[in-house]
Image 1 (spheres, rainbow, N blue to C red):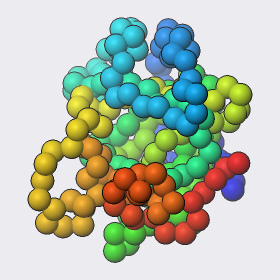
Image 2 (image 1 turned 120 degrees about the vertical axis):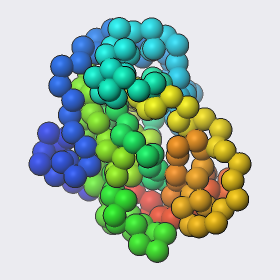
Image 3 (image 1 turned 30 degrees about the vertical axis):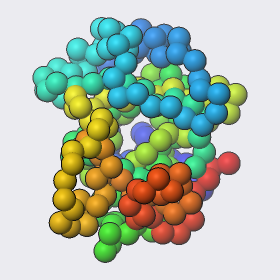
Image 4 (image 1 turned 90 degrees about the horizontal axis):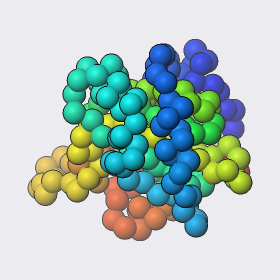
Length: 208
């Protein structure tokens, strides 16, 4: 699978690189959190990361002063498994280089997305990368299996916490998996086994 850079023109449909954010303190705080023994972990809000000076700058510059949370996804991963979207952009900052597997909401047809539409983009360590609300994404992939990945995740406050209790009246309602999180799972994924909406067809992409 071709891996593009977030600086390539192909990324413009999916997001953009945000300039002028000092991330060294944040990366230091991220690196003090141990990798999980296996797989990946995610916490939507981590106090030690939100104590970093860049947190307020991300809130005020990247989100125009909206209340945000700063958490992290970290571990080791090479698979697609699922794609999700929010009703807003997400900002990612890696302690190491990492790869995002992305597709477009406009490529969903009849509630399904063919994984052949997915593209891979490598982001360099320390760079703030905005992923647009119209871009489907999920857990990052590591570049170096020994180092794994640690990727800071900035989202509106409350995102990825417990989903509201709703009566599903349309297909998108069936995709709602957490607060401000709509999920399309591959049938081979753990999320599908746990009852997530199966919305991905084709190969479960594995960068390994």
